[in-house]
Image 1: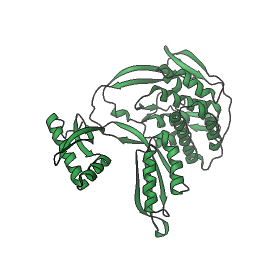
Image 2 (image 1 turned 135 degrees about the vertical axis):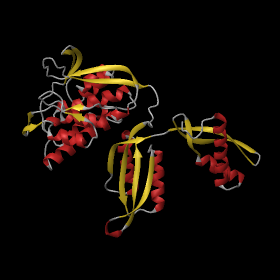
Image 3 (image 1 turned 180 degrees about the vertical axis):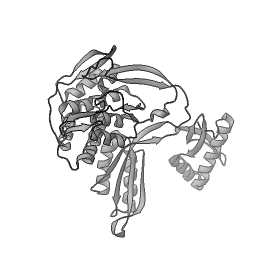
Image 4 (image 1 turned 90 degrees about the vertical axis):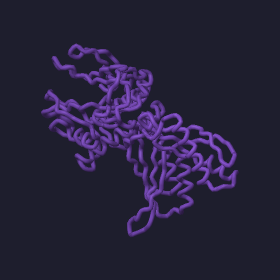
Length: 389
């Protein structure tokens, strides 16, 4: 249903079909009617299969060449969410059941690829109807929502409601996809204009009730009073056998390879040993490469990944500012931080300030202070002061 809704919104059909066909035969895409609403239905024609998480990951790896890297990383995290939920419910479980089948794998890959192809800046998930009553699965009869669905949603922060239908309305796969997609609380949308609307249909066709999921592509229309948001992955490892020089070199390497930030935090480890918590903040599409780099540079045997962490981000720009020091003029780069139409912070870029201080033969902090004073003066002239940008 999610794939159908995203395709109906304008997702790249060819890209989605290529990704899904790496797991199953060519899916059938049809238009159907559900209680008077036209919707897109995707049928994978796949057969059932029971797999362990490593089996599912191998199946995903076989499709890697046909899936955009960002969508591929997202698909893996979806199955990791399902695996954690299954373990929470059943303990150390052996097999995925319904969610390990080829159709579920194709659905996850297709949905992640469809969302990626739309190129949206974020996703808000409205309250999810769960249904009520009982359903039957591979483990027998269970109350709705299914235990795995409830476990996934309990860790997602998403809002749910029971709904009016006496049947299962949200499966574990659907819950994991929505939890992975969500980057913006639904309450933070503010005002917006609707750019596209899409409906995806399931197999059931109850009388009088449209069994569809609706997706909207929207464009926010103004400042809703909150900072913009995005998501990042956080990679962490503890080390107690690496010197400071190696840590400094490793951090520089992480930044070179695309990390948003990297740091080393002193900690006391087991048996009272002093060590460091190495933390790397990165986008999801670079987390795998950076985790491997952390292992190689630091010699660590395990790296934790905290996926899809929401963060608030201020607007930031780097602009040239005319600066004079002892009769010497130069345009120097300054990083400005802003919100709500004005500047609230600024900082001279380090490397150019260091180089100029070396040329002039004066302390670096004096050059930095002169650059930042000149930047604040330029802001006062343009009237974009501390209210933020």
